[in-house]
Length: 209
Image 1 (spheres, rainbow, N blue to C red):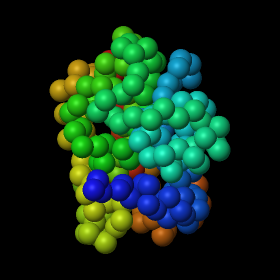
Image 2 (image 1 turned 120 degrees about the vertical axis):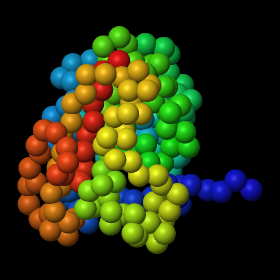
Image 3 (image 1 turned 90 degrees about the horizontal axis):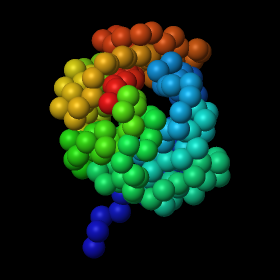
């Protein structure tokens, strides 16, 4: 029997995280927004429940979990079933793609990035939001990984490792934004978003096709 994904089994727990950390969630959305293009058609890969697509105005997402997809549709996002390594999207048909805390869960990150490159039009943008493995929060996640229903099988990457992988897939012209400069429990108001990486735990890496 195929093992069921935690994203099918623990949708309520997934949603509760955002309710428990509203300022962290807001900061992560804003970090993505700083690098998101103002025009063009984009999709989110690893849509989840639409927590990022909805506030960012992304109308379509790719998601393998049908339970997650139910809530994404309730948030007004059109869901296409699929996985990052085999996107049901035509070549060179998308202006930008977004993946937020997705690359740590994909079975084959190299293939996932090649697929993102394939569906982007020339000059299109790929945005990856991730918890930097070398950050304070990244190290905490690693220490508690075995106790997490979501992160037990996750592979965390540093920003430098992520950029290398994106370069291997063909991306160039990189930009980064970062936020979450303290432990999650300490984020109780608007958290700043700064360019670059190396200080914030949540980083958005943008590369161009």
